[in-house]
Length: 245
Image (cartoon, rainbow, N blue to C red):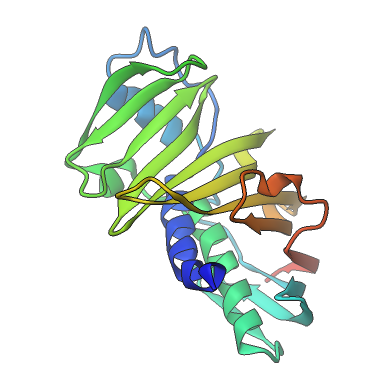
């Protein structure tokens, strides 16, 4: 029941956080950066994104979701809209469309100022791992981040009654920037800080033509401490025969 209630919150949270586009590439040492805002902007502008020539693509998709296997066709169009056809179950179709919309948000190029202006950023010291803590001042969702080893390693937001944390666990470098390959989302009660749900996501991308595209996603969900300890994912999404439009 908790998992069913939290799914809309989790989907919304991931769409927001993927828009931040966690990545690493040529981030200057914060000790020498002009400001926290400059450091965060540099990181944001070095993420891997699709350029204006992105043609879109189609793929066969198989979804092992809610204990059932569904198959169909998906398309990401040049304008970055998403559609899915020939998927019988409404729940599976909606799920895979939302997953692709999150991926599109992560890949879409949006100017830094359009997202973060007029907010500013301030450094708040380091945590025990040595990561810099950066707070976005003026943001209504109490957004704050951690930055270490040339990447944003954590994003935090409060949305109504829940607080959501996204931790970057693994990454892959490309010549054009970096892709997140493994991340975890933690949803807490904003008032009590009780953990309501954890989700562990592992992504696999392939370079098809000019662009890196998502070909596999594994999702492990639990109310326990370590969703990544599950040997078998709760949900598997595979994109086969990926073809540019």
